Image (tube, rainbow, N blue to C red; front, side, top):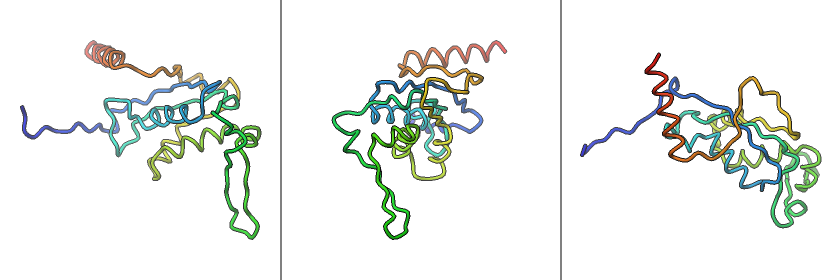
Length: 166
């Protein structure tokens, strides 16, 4: 056994981001946000490198129909202050979902990503839409299904076989 094994670190040119579609209809907000954050970050890939944006693009449809547990629609409060006297602004999750359902998912995912420029780049790969349609058909997005090790290995073998033929 090698006493000094080298850690693999992917190069920016080796990364091949893909497009995935998440349907938020009936899914719990927090569980959906953790899945999206992992895909955006690329932690499920064997080529994960912490200092590179090695994640994929994510399209979320039906954001207005996301679900929450317990009584959070009325109890969860989003708060911000305008920095002016009397500038405290509060709205419940129910009000936020009625006004801008996209922002609810974006805010939940943003809290699970790094707080730096890399996290901002990852958020740029997130596209959220309130309804069932999106304008990204040209990118040929696939519906997200959590990959198993067998499916990842088969995909790598197929891509290695295709590059060997070329």
